[in-house]
Amino acid sequence: FAAMRDAVRTTINDLRETNVAIERFVPQAFLAKIGKPNIVSVALGDNKREHMTIMFSDIRNFTALSETMTPDENFAFINAYLEYMGPVIRENGGFIDKYIGDAIMAFWNAPADLPDH
Image 1: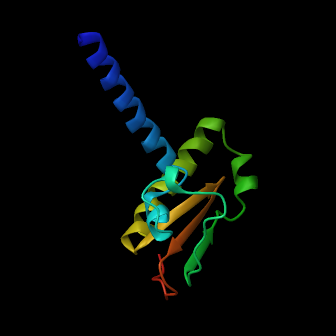
Image 2 (image 1 turned 90 degrees about the vertical axis):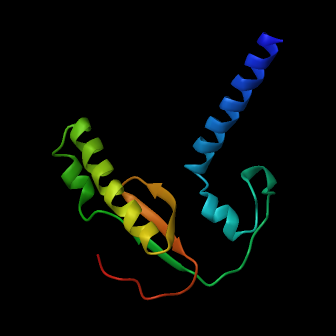
């Protein structure tokens, strides 16, 4: 029984870790927006028409800038940028849909004038 209990605990922990990893790519806020409780319930072709604010941001001249940095400096620079932008987006009612290199794509639930940061 102890081995079976340990196997069940391991499986549950693995599933939790998998869910956390999936949420990095498909945010819970996005699933809620399309009315789905989890990624498993999303079927090919599911969609929902909404009026939303979408923000695309990226770092001006990042390619040229990154060529002057080491890989570790690049990594630290991007992480500092993302660590700043993520909370600002969430504090203003948005959620990040995806990261595209140095770019961020974020959504807000309705068309809006957003504050400057």
